[in-house]
Amino acid sequence: MKNKYQHLLFDLDRTIWDFEKNSKEAIKEIYSHFKIDKFQPDFEIFFNTYHAINEELWEKYRIGNISKKELSETRFANTFKTFGFDGTKEGKKAGEMYLELSVNKTHTFEGAHETINYLSKSYELHILTNGFKEVQERKLINCNLRDFFSTIITSEDAGYQKPDLKIFEFAFEQTGANNQNTIMIGDDESTDIAGAKNARMDSIWFNPEGKAPKETPNYQVKTLPELTTLL
Image (cartoon, rainbow, N blue to C red; front, side, top):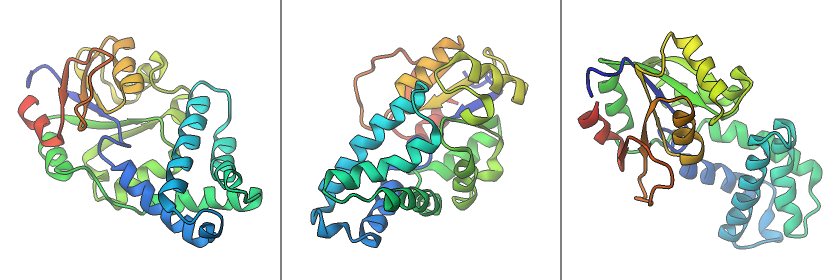
């Protein structure tokens, strides 16, 4: 396996960058800033409600039913309204704050730096992400990981989102890679693993929770350092 690949395509959020931990810290600051405790004193209830609303909106965004602007502007507004706070204007501001706050959070999964440093000596590394273009590179810079990656490819650059075959074809064009000498590494079965399957390329499922697979990755790992034994 070590001689099979030349390029590694990494997802970013929930694969390298600890989205849940970083996001929760940012949302806690927003909760405090807008004094949401007056409407919902239990932060965990607020956070879980936001999380559900955000996931629903992201799914609509992935399939093209809403725009990026609508996603950003309504996820907090809709959450606020759930608790009786008609904060449309505040929700839009909270969306802007969230992007600025979260991008400065630097929690990565255990062993991320050591693993990526190790892999960068033998492979060309790239990011392939459905996340917003304006924040993904900044996350890597703030986590001191940007220099390890030759290319950062976002769905906005490609005009398509994982698992669409076209985003992988775009990635191959940008990197000079192909589906035979590249492997996809990501946490999301429905985008990363299914997308790799669409592109007829190999994949590694990052599965820290040990969930039962629905798709068929070629390999799976629970921790990032396990990649060094595979690759």
